[in-house]
Length: 129
Image (cartoon, rainbow, N blue to C red; front, side, top):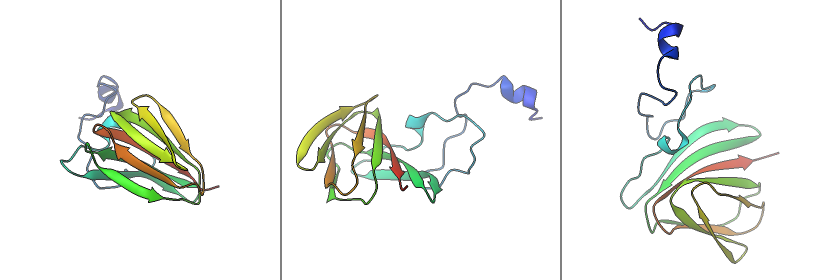
């Protein structure tokens, strides 16, 4: 039987794998290890929307080494939190190296691009208002 007492004895880490490609149920009533939100796939970029609200989105990404997003702009500020690995971010023509445990802000309306130096995972928080 799954009683609240039984659940409290379990580890705080998610015990079931997260379903790739699906949005997480909201609100989340369990703790989740951020780096486990997406899995690496050879030669690919994997994304998973964690949260979507009128004021913004939260999306987890896993980039295989060498994968890239070409230069583009967004009408909103974005915060990238690096979970694993290393990436090169080009923002308004300036290159920045970011790695696990670091974050970087992508300003609205500034061209930016992302390239995986090593395979990496990140959490993208897009602020719309």
